[in-house]
Amino acid sequence: MNKLIVFDLDGTLTESKQPLDSEMASLVAKLLAVTKVAVVSGGALPQFLKQVFARLPNDANFANLYLLPISGAALYEFCEVGLGKIYEERLSEKEAHTIETAMREAAKETGLINFSEPAWGERIEYRGGQVTMSALGQEAPLAEKKAWDPDHAKRRKLQAAIAARLPEFSVGMGGATTIDVTKRGIDKAYGIRQLCKRLGIPESEALYVGDELMAGGNDEAVYKTAAQTKSVKNPAETAKIIKSLLLN
Ligand SMILES: [Mg+2]
Image (tube, rainbow, N blue to C red; front, side, top):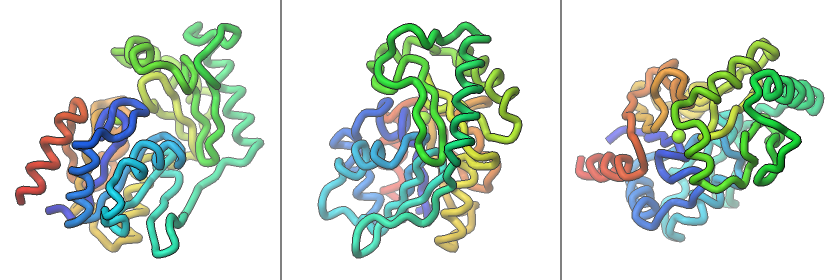
């Protein structure tokens, strides 16, 4: 059994922005009983609490659970008094404004997002350590999100157009319709490295499970670490991997 198992959230433990289903919640709880488990995603902490924490059984071993919201820009762990923040690499309001301007310009230049059309919720969200642009809005229905950019082509164009304007930041693809911008050098690899250091676990003894490890995918940065990786297509495959890990 690996000393640390790190999961991507959307597309890996759950469908986009959905809570863990009861089977996955019980499998994660079984892992927590025997090893350390971390979850990393572009979402902010409240999203993690809703999708993961609230779904785990009350008697789960939360001392083994680590949360890396905003693509590793922050790290939380559970202690006796509850959830504790270990670090957060925040963007200033001025930086967030610079990023928002670049996002709006890139949307216009590529013609892929028209900000004057209605959206499902906010299109641009400041999450402390990250600014996220959601093409259809934060609250878009899952089916609409999945249909918007199935081959990543739109996100790739938006990513390139934003990155060209923001050389001093990291610009990455987030979920099915989102582009995430963080301080330069902040990505899932950064988060995993910080966590391994804190736990004194060599990166090579950690296992990363994600659905976007392909080139350009939002898990690709993980290859910068020495962590072992397992690629999955969906949560059902992740459930199979957890079951086989539990047999060891
Ligand atoms: Mg994913």
